[in-house]
Structures are given as structure tokens and as C-alpha cells.
Image (cartoon, rainbow, N blue to C red; front, side, top):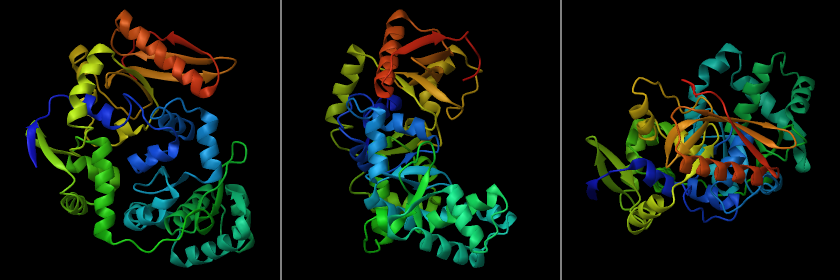
Amino acid sequence: MEGRQIDNIALLRLENQHLVSPRFGNPVDVLRALGAVQSQDYAGAKWALAQRTRGLADPDVEDALTSGAILRTHVLRPTWHFVLPEDARWMLALTAPRVAAAMGYYMRTHELDERVFRRSHKAIERALRDGAQLTRAELAAVLRRAGVDVSTGQRVAGLLMQAELDGVIISGARRGAQVTYASSDARVPAAAARDRDDALQELARRYFATRGPATLNDFAWWSGLTVTDAKRAVEAAGDFLARETRADRAHWYAPSTQVTRATRATRVALRRSRVAHLLPNYDEFFVGFRDRSAFSERLRRAAPNHPVNALMGHILCIDGQIVGGWRRTLGKHVNVELRLLVPLTPPERLLVQRAGARFGEFLGAPTRLSNAPLTAAV
């Protein structure tokens, strides 16, 4: 399905990522829409989920993770993501081989192979019977008693990652500040193997519905799939997707109300009431794309020679455009230090104050904003 030339990708993506007018009431619904949310920065990823809901607080997200309503594991790319239990098996089946291949050099360097994994998997499975949930240190002790070499932290990390990729373990409830692991079978419902083309179609459908307009290379980057498989996925989802162009490149999106009837309403709403976001590092609004240039148009106009790396830290956005970075420190108040890259107007500063207040509500403490000197780096 061919359409018009896209005129503002950043605003469309804000809407499709549910960052303009969040309609979700819980993190499960957010993940059901987005498919997966990158989460190696655990605290930041919880805030990422909350910003796509109506007023969710940190304990609400924590409760969902404790109960197993949402899970955390290595999937798509060699990093942690939040996923739903119902999606964990088929997403791992589709993408774990690519993650394992990407980790091949690491595993060989630390002398981890199939023989070692068979022994370590067996020991871990025994230890996690009957609903047990163990920390990394406790699992390392289990492996040591089973005769598995855990002499370095890198070996332990590799053993646990492979156990995740092979569907042996998945996230358990946190024990204070410590991560625990549980048996996948205890937290992930049993399901028949999914047809590969069906899995490709489902992943493409969720991606382009919530990240579109996006290119094939964007999808390949996010999913960890080869470009060949990414093309196959887009073809499988063809009835669901529409194609438009920008700078002579094809962009795909889901032609639902999010990108048709609501698009005009969204643009009108943004003109009348603009939006600011304190986005955490690795937020899907940025990390979901190989090409992130759509988010730096304002910055390029203000500082044409300024390098932009939207993955270097927390990002301050106005109307989907990078205007700076931020960092937090916690005490009696939530102290948010802004690192502006472009000057803000007084109305924009009010928007940022509202975003800061929402962040304080999420953490259950008042927010104090401060400005670092205008700087050349996020």
C-alpha cells in the first residue's frame, strides 16, 4: 500500500509509542503493544513502561515483575528486554540463535561450549525445582558444587545467558537490589512451537505498529534478525502494513487509526499543547531504530556540527526532538539535573517542569529541577 510523503516522523512515532496520550493502565498492556522493551538499565526501563501508562508508579511496575506478569530476559539482541510470559517462548525461538551467534566469540574466549552448557543447565534445573528463585551468586555456588568452572564473573555471565537463551531460566522476583532467576517452566506458560513465518509476521506487526514509520533496516536492527529475515517478516505482514517514503527511502507503518484518522488529531493536539519527556537511556523511542536522525532535527539546526548519540544517557525531548540530557540523584527529593544542548523558551521550560513532576510522582517524591551549564555533550 503506497501513500503520501511522510512529513514529521518524530511526531508520528511519539503517538505510535503511546507517549502523547497514554491509554494503558498497566505495564502488561504496554508490553503487549510494544512486544519488548530494552531493560538492561532496570530503573530506567521501569520508567519507560510507566510513561506509556496513565499514572503508573514504580511499585506498580515492580509488583508486575515480582509476580511474573512481566519478565526480563535476553532476547532480540544480546541485552535484556522486558517481555510478557506469553511471548517469551516464541520470541526466544525466533531470535535466540542470532543472539547466541553474536555471543560466539565471547563464549569461545571464556571456554564455554555445548559440553559445559549441558552440565551447567542440568545443575541449574535441579537447583530451581519446586519454584526456587536464586541470585547469580547462589547459582554460581550451585555450579561450583556441580564441578563447573565459575572462576570468573565472565564465565558465570556466559553460563547464565546461555541458560536464558535455551529457555532454562528467566527472571524471578528481585531480592532487595539483587536479581534472581527462576525456572522458565515455572513462569512461562507451555505453548506449542510457533510457525516461523507466523512468528516473523507477529514481530513485524508489533514493531511497525508502535515504532513506525520505520525502515526495513530499523526493524532488522531492533529485532536482531538478518535483513533477509526482516524482509520476509515485512512480506508476511504485508496485509497489515502500509508503505510511505521519506528522503527516497521506504518507511513502513500500520495503517490503523494511530497513523490515519488520529494523525491529524495528534498534530492538532501537539500544536495546541506541546509535550516534553524525560526519557531514560535505551528508551524504545530511540533504541528501536538504526537511523535516529529524525529525533535530532532541532539540534542540527541549532548546532549543525554537534554529534548526536541518543544512547549515551537519559534524553530530554520536546515534541520528539532532542534538546538535551538529564540525570537524577535521589534523596528526600528527586533531583533532576538538566544538561541542555539548545536554549528553551519559557513555555518549553514549563513543559519540562511538568515532565519532572510526573517523574517525581512515579518515584513517590517531590522533584527539583536544576540546569547544568549549556554543554556540547549529552
